[in-house]
Image (spheres, protein in one colour):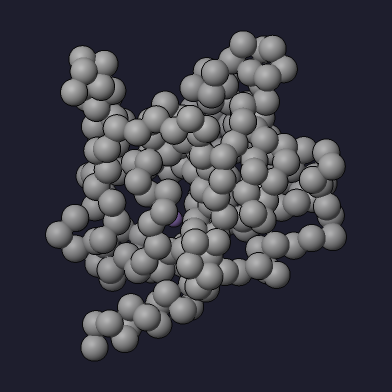
Length: 210
Ligand code: MN
């Protein structure tokens, strides 16, 4: 491991502190992380998660971790609709392909599927604003071009409210991928990785433990 890699690893462990503090890895099958990866193209993932309430976890690879938001209603393809996105703890990159059932007494108990995923681009940097993703995050305004199977085109994530009570809004930008008639969260419920629905993941788990 080079010096730079070990430095990245230290930072990653530090940034994932909250993630680790919430989980018991003897019980949950969620990934522990720790791998040093830097993909050529950063990725986004949207996981559908039926915990105490159903929501979509929107995650963006930024500097070696997945910055994360819980979006109760999931993303819309209609530029006229703003979706609330509540920030949650950073997740390890390995979480991007996690599907399964988080056990009952664990944080976030319930089934998880990968509802959509793909590469993304930083539109603020491309516009020549010279802002990397980490800077744009600090600035409270992300503009990204998503290339998923269900969700694609430009999206803005905009922070509102003060630091302690930060809320973000996820908004489809008005471009050729915008479509007010589509409603993929209801018409396309399956995982893009396994083709399974949340219900199927839950049932399979039930069978396996019998
Ligand atoms: Mn969640």
